[in-house]
Length: 214
Image: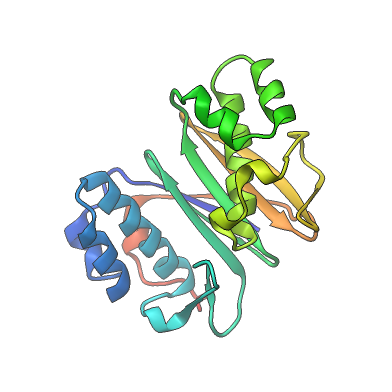
């Protein structure tokens, strides 16, 4: 599987807007904050650059909104937060979450984590432990295509180690990646896959799609 990682700095909205699908342009225009517009744009540019997505007709969506390629191809998932956008691709179902590490309300941890997870968190130092739990849960919820219909407090991701985790009747494998004040977690179902991390520069997003497109 692959993780494509791109920062949102040095991305020109005007230069990139004409390259993404009409549907994504509509989503970009609905945002007010410039950073939100850039994150949405970069997500679309990653899909265009590496999978040739130029039209919404290329994509279909599951019951809870998870996108996939209509005509087959690798599974994929997108996430963006803070300064980064991440695109994960795999042969089987995959979910990815990136989060900027910053202070969080304890009430959120109590509400979204199981009692053993919350107890584990209280024994850790620093904020990264919270985001390791959070990103693991988000990546499974997204990978399963269920979103918040799979409440985060309804399942456990402990132990926070690589290896098989049985969650909701399926087997998931986690991989975490620290990223300049952020943390990334990807979850892939069925069988572990080696992860190739590809850092994408802003100017590369403007190039024509690669040959391995959809």
